[in-house]
Amino acid sequence: MRKTYTDLVNECLPHIHELFPWDLVEERANGKKLLLVDVSETQEYTRYHIPDSINVPRGILEAACDWDYDETVPALARNRDTAIIVICRSGKRSALAADTLQQMGFSNVRSLKTGLRGWNDYDQPLVDGNGQPVDADDADEIMTTTLRPEQISPV
Image (cartoon, rainbow, N blue to C red):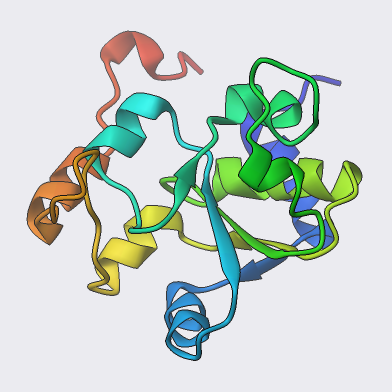
């Protein structure tokens, strides 16, 4: 049976924990030690991300969180017991990434439900690659899905 992207995301959801943007805001306000891992592609991260998050694109995640690879990200590899919040634009890639991290032995991983879209809708700050604030309306426009005709399912 052929699975779709949505099928894969839905299959992992029962195995992971998610939190909403307001939960993340509360935990940060209470000083909880969190490692924010944005699995968006580098060009997305450069355009908008949550302050103090690190970028580990989904495509290199497995190597980034393990030692002895060119892609190893020490801040991730050494923090298998730290509270990790995985982030992406919509919450789908982060759900898959959270599932992967758990399979690799990370014990305290959650995915940001609704992703950066929900974070922005909740009026929380985003910054660009230079650490400069990103206007919420600009971020909303950037995050809006725009499919080309050839990307739309013919059936």
